Amino acid sequence: MTSITPKQRRRSTRRSKSKWIQHALRKHKRGALHRQLGIPEGETIPLSLLRDASKQSGLLGQRARFALNLRKVRQHHGKT
Image (cartoon, rainbow, N blue to C red; front, side):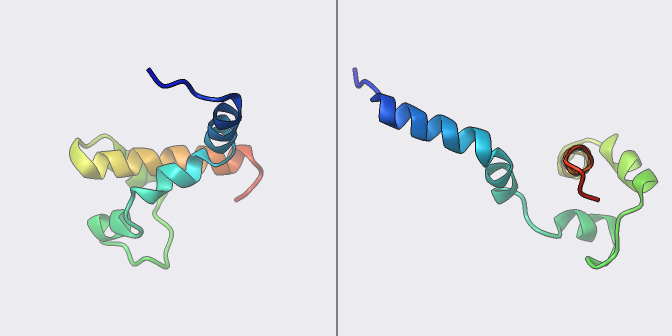
């Protein structure tokens, strides 16, 4: 059994707390939700369309729900 040193534990918890959203964004393809909804990447996705898409199953629904959650995170931290 391998043991984790305190230094390794501090490093892993520090990274997971401070940069958790960067790790979550890495696995998502940039612009995929725009392409699936047929909206050009420069334009914002209307909230009503995003809510409707979040009710669907599959990858489209997952991407729309993730976008809604990111929107909440941005509003919570004062960025619009």
